[in-house]
Length: 49
Length: 244
Image (tube, helix red, strand yellow):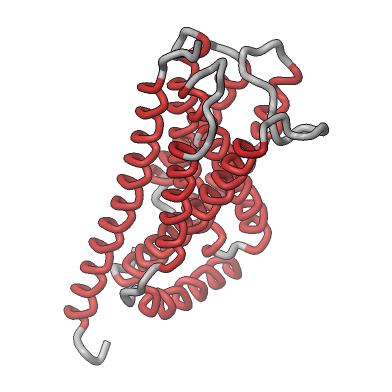
C-alpha cells in the first residue's frame, strides 16, 4: 500500500516556490531602492555632474 | 599598499561608469527562462512522473532537494574560486561576485535543509537527526550566514573583502566532506543516486525529471546570481557617489 504523505511534498514545493519568489522580490526591491537613491544623487549633482 | 589602493580606486571609478549603464531597466530574459524551466520541471514532477511505491508522494521531494543542494555547493564553489582570484588580483568585481554567490548559496542551502526535513519526517519519522550529512550541511549554512554577517560588520572595503575571502575559501573546504560524509560515516542519509561510479539507480521517467530539475535549478542560480550582481554593482556605484 502506498503511504499517504502527499502533504509533505506539497508543502516542500510550496516552500521552494515561496522562498525563490521572496528572494527574487527582495533583489528587485533592493535594486529599485538603490537606483532611486542613485537618481536622487545624480539630480543633486546637477546636469554637469 | 598604495598600488592596491590605487587599483581599487581605479576599479571603483571604472565600476561607476558601467554601473550607470547597468542601472538602465532591462528585460531579464535569463530570469524568465529560468522561471519557465523551474515551472516546467514542477509540472513534470507533479503530474507526469510516477510515484515511488515504497515512499509514496513524499519521494517527489527528491526533485527539489538534491538539485538545491547541488546549486548550494556550486554557489559556494564560485565564492571560493572568486575569493582565491580576488586575493591574487585584488579586483573588487571578484569580491562582489563572491558576496552575491554566497547570498544565493545561503538561499539554496536553506531550501535544502527545509526540504530535507520535510522528506525526513514521513520517511524517517523525525524532522531532524544529528547525522553527519545533515549536521555538516547545517554547519555550512552557519558558516555562510556568518560570512554575510561579517560583510555587514566590517566598514573598510579592502579589509571586508580580504576577511570574507578567507572565510569564503575556508567554508568551501566543507563541501567535499559533506559529499563524502555518507561514505565516511554510518548515516541515515541515502547514498547518491546519480553521482556514483555505477549507473544511476532510477527508472528513466524519474531520471529525466531529476536531470531536468538539476538543469532548471542551475539556470535559476545563474539568473539569480546575475540579478544579485547587478544590484551589487548599483550599490557600488551608490557608495562611490556618496563617497563611502
